[in-house]
Amino acid sequence: MPFARWIKHLCYGDWRVRRAFPDSALHSIERAIHEAEKTHSGEIRFAVEGGLDIGPLLRGMTARERAVEVFSELRVWDTEQNSGVLIYLLLADRDVEIIADRGIHARAGQESWECICRDMEVEFRAGRFETGVTAGIRSVAAHLQKHYPARGDDINELADRPVVL
Image 1: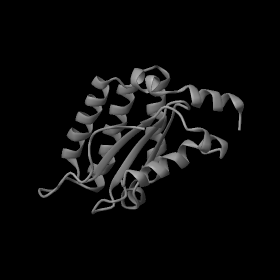
Image 2 (image 1 turned 180 degrees about the vertical axis):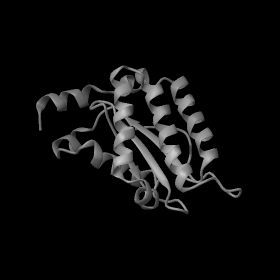
Image 3 (image 1 turned 90 degrees about the horizontal axis):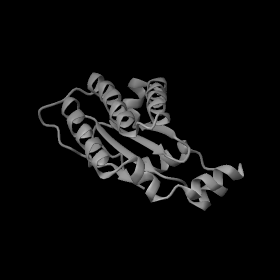
């Protein structure tokens, strides 16, 4: 594990997350999720983390491994139609991972999620974090709308509020 990555992660505190995602951006992301979920019967969660703690760093944890862990912790898998999707950002690595429940993943496929992640990362490199996330939400929603169209009896199974870890 490169020493530089350790330093980077350990220096990416809450203040860096708040700088990239002030309250106004978090509210905008929450609204984007709320509006997107009106168009389909899936569930979208967004989580951002500044950097990994020392334990995961020593184990060489990747952003993908952490995203799977967060997917479980936030119970994104616990939806009636297996249509939950987590968009996870590890800010220190500027790495986006999308973890989708088995129902939507089988229909949309990993390639779709990878394409959305790369598009978001382009925005993040330019410092446009809110824009990148809201565009990612719209892209994920397009897949959910195609495979899980809105129903009249839809309920919001997961909170729309972004999670800052």
